[in-house]
Length: 362
Ligand SMILES: Nc1nc2c(c(=O)[nH]1)N[C@H]1C(S)=C(S)[C@@H](COP(=O)(O)O)O[C@H]1N2
Ligand SMILES: [Mo]
Image (tube, rainbow, N blue to C red):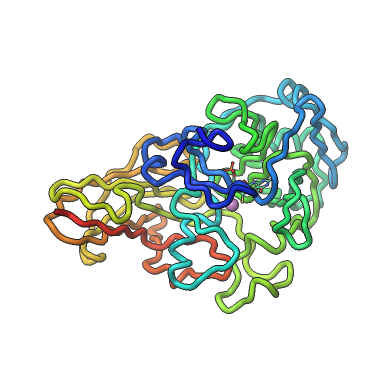
């Protein structure tokens, strides 16, 4: 165990704030990611909250503002369990950095994504108890961790539109893989917004506010936005670019390790594919010849909704040098883009281009 109870070998991008992803091979071992392997993405210091003194505030455009303890949340609402994959918008940023440098942003590999089972209550039920006013269009979340990365420095926050907030998969969760939610993952209570970028799953939640407009928090209004390729991220006004919410179709190879030297012969390749919300991963193709020919990978047939589909393929490789490629297709026939240059953006979000690894077979 290393810092924050993560596995030895965790790839730590930053100690403070703590930002770490599992090595690809460790992520590949499980459909449900163990807590010590789950990536951790933070913009400020990890708070230490006394669960007995903690209260959740529900306010804004509601008929009855609420202040609820953990016991009141646990006993007053139906408890539900949802398996969900969380993906950071910066997942696979290294592929974009290889096209053109992205200063000031962590060089995440394919491991800024993980899958867990969350238990808690539906956000919709808490909003119903408070009584949403008809003008409420966005639900904002606030947390106490003050981020020095924000301009100006401020506590972390964000929002989702009301139509997503009312869906049954959106939770206020206090357990993760049947264990109490770890401190690094938002104890005592976090939001879980399946199918949306990890940034909207606000940890250490203290306040829910119903509003007419999205949150004006830095991490909603300025960061986590897809800027045009020629924009200067140091000089963009709040509201510029595309606000990221739903994730896009993505796919990555996790095994073998990039740069491996292996014996020639049957070679097992494995990874994950994640669909956009309300879509499904229908196929993953793997190529060993630069995309001239493709073989279909075997998909996990039992993946719960809102989770990635793990996949594997066996390729018979003669001695030589190979670039292995993987791409995914969804139920609309959409596929992942070939080149990271096509999706490059100044903050380095949403890289879903073909996953490539290099192999030598002897
Ligand atoms: N309060 C708070 N919530 C937060 C963050 C944060 O820095 N502070 N980071 C967000 C981002 S960008 C991601 S990707 C997910 C990561 O969740 P994890 O650390 O449990 O993997 O938490 C989100 N919730
Ligand atoms: Mo993120």
